[in-house]
Each structure stands twice: as structure tokens, then as C-alpha cells.
Length: 310
Image 1 (cartoon, helix red, strand yellow):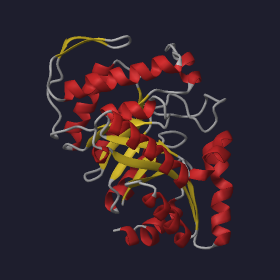
Image 2: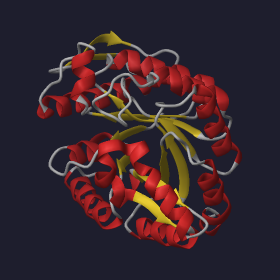
Image 3: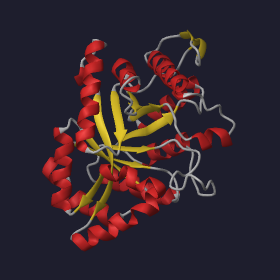
């Protein structure tokens, strides 16, 4: 089992994010990532809350760390030209010494699209755009000159030079749609990520991914499977309750929706829950941290939860 930290770059300062990244880098975490939103999503109805842009924040993450993998879960394919996104990823790969992982998603927050003048396409088109983006990025990262005429993506003799520092810059795809999304994962992804599912639901989605891999003649072991989970941990039941009471300040109206995927309890209970995810097929557990960050709980997780999985 490997552990990561996924911190939405919202409702906090860059210094707080640097503190979080350094803590992960110094304490055995394998991964740090940001997300790609133009507004804070803690309160979907209030755009007047701070939210940093993802590519720039990912570059700051690369500069603030030396060991963790540097990712984004996930870049919304509708927000940027895929060639420009690929160039940014390769640049950050060089800044980080070859530690970049590139996550892609179809996008869902219609408010952001509308506010910034980006067409919010029907879900079928957004999934088409996701698949076309994955196809061209893989070819660009592998050094091809790419001409591509898709429904949404158009490249004309495009080249990504320099190449990534690492031999294979992995593509991640986020989501859980069983009819189309997981088939795209089976076809194109090196890693799969999904947030806030209970272990039994994660196991069902992983089985669906296995089925799609069989149909696509893809070795399912070639795709790293990861889950994003929240954290409400405490030394005793009273401390756990205080952290659970803080969840609405982090997740707003989505609190009840995401609760099945939050690690709630004292360290022994959290260890047991991670074991459930491991048995469900998760290879990495990534802590989805939101401001206000629970520094005490994170230290407790590092000291009492991570060692049994080393």
C-alpha cells in the first residue's frame, strides 16, 4: 500500500500548501497532487472564495518537493488545448526531475465553464473529448509528430520537444462511469483514480474495469488503481467527533455524499478501513485534504496509521 496527499488549492494560502507538501515529502508519502478548478468547490454557489490555477500550483508543488510524485487529479480536458497541457506537463516533469503524473477528467462543474466562457458540452461529447485528449497526449509524450482530426481535438504535425525526463510519463483518468468512462480507462490509462467511494463500491467499479480490460485485450495489472478518501481521525472518540463536525466546513453541501469515502475514527478503525480498501483492490490510498487542514490529525495518521502498511 502506498499513500498520497491530494490537496485542493482553494480556501488556503500557498504557504499552507507548501507546508502540507513538505510534510508529505518528509514523511514517506509517495504522491502529492492538486486539482483543476477555477472556483472553490466547498461552496458551489459562492465564487468569491480563493482558488488557485492548477498548472501553476502543480509547478509550485514540483519546486517545493524532492521525492513525492507530482500529480493533478484531474485536469479538466475542456479548459485547455491538449497540446498546451502536454507541454506544461513535460515542463513540470523537467522541473521536478521526472516526477510528474498527468491526470485527466471530463469535467463536471458547469458554473466554472459558464463563468469563464468555456462551452459546457453534453456528457457524451465531454467523454469523446477526454478520449481524444488521452490519445494525442500519449503520442506526443512518446515522441511522435502528431496529426489528428477528432471531433474536438485537432493537431497538425505537432511535436512535444523536449520529451519527458522519465521514460513513460503516465496518464491517469479519473471517474467511475461504468458504461463509457471505465472503458476509456481500460483503453488508454496507466492509472485510475476515483474519489470518496465506500470499499464495496470501489470493488464493484474495479471489477467493471477488469471486464473492460478483458474486452480491450489489456492487462488489468497495467493500470494502477487508487482511491481518494477524506480524513477525520482523532486520538479518542471525542476528538473523532470534533473532526467529523468539521467536515461541512470542508465539503459544504456535498458532505453527506462523500462521507462513505471518509476515514472516520481512531487510528485502529482507520487502519481497518484502509485494509478494506486494500482488499477491494486499491493499491494507493490518497488523502483528500481540504482547508482548514487538520495538521494534528495528519501527524497522527503518519505516526500511527502508516507504519503497519510499510
